[in-house]
Length: 243
Picture 1 (cartoon, rainbow, N blue to C red):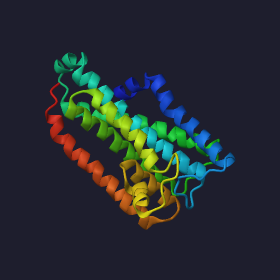
Picture 2 (picture 1 turned 30 degrees about the vertical axis):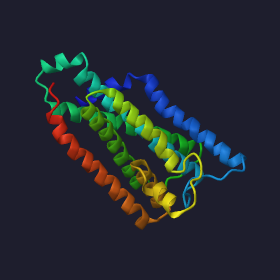
Picture 3 (picture 1 turned 180 degrees about the vertical axis):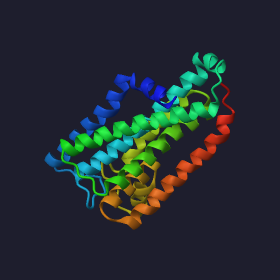
Picture 4 (picture 1 turned 60 degrees about the vertical axis):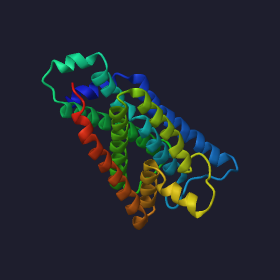
């Protein structure tokens, strides 16, 4: 069933093109801007290069929008015309949720990998401690897919899930300093590192690539805790979904 949902997701060619090419365009644009215009970057750079930090930041940003892969699919199946067909089948609710979430996480991670590979071989981005960075990006993917699904099941409709993810996807990169510098004080420094789940994944990735393990660990642990909280919320919600 996971493979079925993967193939079903891949039919949305335009959606995947947007989630892959638009972040690449933004990476090109901001890299050009910082190289050729005398403006200060808002990125918290240490060891990682600017292009690497931009790639990680925009890959994480579009993982948020990629959460629609799971909750829009579930909305079609659970709250749309497909509901009656599923009701007549022997499928269990938990199996359906698991298949959609796993397949959506796989597709979103493939999108992230394509962005990173392109930045590596075309733009020269380097990724120290790559296996750990991939792990953080994967946890971020899972968190975002869970977040959209939990909102969908709570609201029983796709509109609120879309609105929340759009708002979150707009605000989080700004708080991470991806678009412009934040004020230089303790409060905004904390917000930039820990203010949102996307900031947690971003600061953990950049800190690891800069060999600042003790700075990366709290952010990574916080992201893991939030992910398990969503899993805990999803469990009772799944019982209320009758297909």
